[in-house]
Length: 230
Image 1 (cartoon, helix red, strand yellow):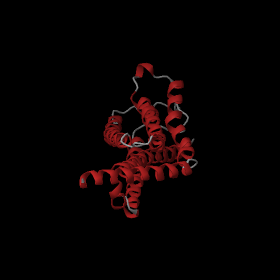
Image 2 (cartoon, helix red, strand yellow):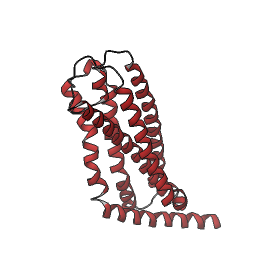
Image 3 (tube, one colour):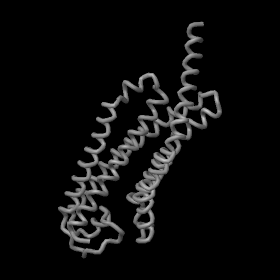
Image 4 (cartoon, one colour):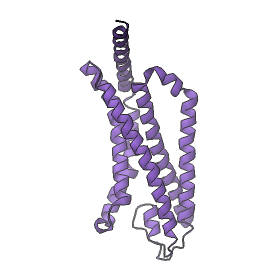
């Protein structure tokens, strides 16, 4: 691959990876509002709010990718031009640098990790509230359908984050070229490949689950209202 091609590849990879993570966080917020605050859904997640969140995800992904790409390729590369990976990845490029300036990129990666951790904490907190609300549904079928709308998303989040964190934070003592390639395939190829299966092919099932869930929510709200009136 050419030098410019490597720059372009790294930029688009970081851009897509960060944007996907932000969208996964937004999707978690969507599920949290629809299940835990159903009466405020149209207010909190109207078409304008969704457009703003989507634009923020794309803009954030672009900004992060631009910073990482510019900082990575500003380093002098003097240890050859052979990458131990099947595409241009930041850790592999840093290994070719002979300058201590790579610490700047490590610092930027640390900041990104903190932001990613914040999104992760938000996702965990949201799903704790979601599961608490779902467990209050009296119908076993309703609980099953509600869980089926959340578990695929949660599975993709877990697979994406666990493999990415392992790839970037694993100790050097267990690092090997074959392991690096295998883990990178898991977080860069598998989650995007599963997205069409999870979010497109199951649309009818998700719609049916949503209708059933709203019926249960309506019943629960009515029963609580009658109890308050009593």
